[in-house]
Image (cartoon, rainbow, N blue to C red; front, side):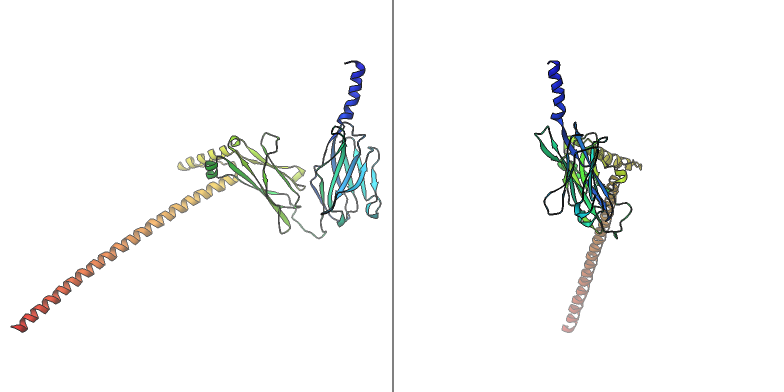
Length: 341
């Protein structure tokens, strides 16, 4: 390749790559009226300075609607949406390769999902969209707890399920969070690959929400730790929660260790509080079964004793009846002989 061809190739390379990805890390933003919010959109591009970033919004049960676009990193774009000047503003920050949409003077009508998008050069000039950020406008009189982040409770597979199906099901229950926008995914502990999982519905309970998600682990992954990753706007410090689930094989071994040590009167520390609860429940069930069995034996012994006592009394009554009948019969015979003589 000649120097001229190499120069031409290198000049053409950024144009070919261009914008390749847009990401909105905020899945939701909650606010009250009259406030302002910023919605961020991360741009992966080799030509950020030249890229045009578009913003759209979609209200419930309505079509996607164009809102504003921004092309310059030097000056923001503004829109008087709703008759108010500077109601909507979009800008580009070249230092962090991010486009920021600002909505001022928040009103109830501004509640919607906001999307950013850009033209992808490498995909044949196709406009690609981010996942969107839901803006939630809450009533000013709403009073919620100071901590409205998802509260996790983990449930580990039972020994019966492991032995019967050679697999296990992890269940992650999330409670008492607000708003209802939440994203749950599963990964192996040391992997970045998102696993196929099942998602339950998000259910409203009073003023907060709950949701559960579960992952079925097959035999080939039973020796690996897994984690449930929870994305929510009210997570502490804005960091996704990563809830660790110990490997199923490890869980089974710890059950065995617990049972063996119990024989010697020694307890071994269990990694998960839910395992402790399960073991306690199993031990309580065993004690209940032993107590029930003891009560049953005692009841059976009592019934058997009563039965044989009844038979003895009945036999005794029959003997008494036979003696009395014999005496009466003999007396009658003696008396009859006396009269006849």
